[in-house]
Length: 427
Image 1: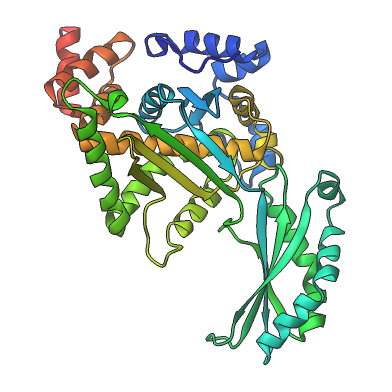
Image 2 (image 1 turned 60 degrees about the vertical axis):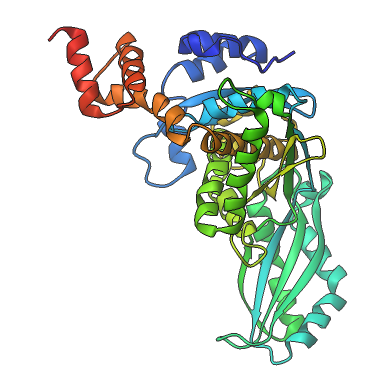
């Protein structure tokens, strides 16, 4: 059974960490070799994935620990370049598991495909005409993907949106609502939209222009909830109640001010994006949907909510679109994407989405807690000091020695790292 607590993980070498993860997740020798050696993605395979390939690009690949989601321990692979993200997510997950961990849920994996119709003078009449032919349209869409139908998915319904007065004249937009099962679904819904377009033109008398998915996947939502008591949040310097009040003040700032909300939500995506990248999913689609969702009230706001319950505990929630898949695209072709899914132990795309939003909620808590206490820079700069030491030319044990000195001094600069390296080497 997987234990996500990863005791003393930070003190191990990368090889020792990999050995532990391989043991608890039953990785094969070949799978371990993919992670242990650079170049897991061969140039030949990369050349089959995108155009004009000249090489491959790698990011640090880490594992966030301590996550307990719906009572199950989960190890979370994250591919990211920024210091403190994996550490912050892991630490917040450690606090959360003392109070039962994260609770998650999700809606079905329904994506939208949009079919734009122009050249109609009676847009509301065209709407009713399309609705009258709903069953015919749905059947035609489903005729394009028998495999999806066999898996229990397929086009479920249509929606019609009318824009009677645009700079290009009246516009009717039909949405196909498609259950894509464990796929992200872009290719599936785009194909369906294109296949029904001639029928839509026949029914409406208009001309179809765009036939494409929407990345505002508002019917494909993932949710997470966490509850933390004042006792768990307490530090040597601050009472838990004071930290909770500070978190609520910081959250309220994001809820009312779009300038703050942009940075607040970026911190949430600091947790989500590395999971999406590590699993070979489309992080740009997830980002687009997240920020559009944050504007759904007509004003850009927070993706999370933070409240205090009647017992005085802090309760955080998140609900947002999560269009991710386990099949198709890089999820199937990139060897490390497959390894990430194996390490995580998820069985469905919905479960992957739920893990991702739980990590985003944890990351948000870490940022709000830091802002409400010592400030964001103290912990971040301590970890960033390692990067600065590397830039200065430190190697091996020199990296930690110089990083710790700079962090203790509160002076994390390249010139200071150069001076310390010179001192350490006696040159």
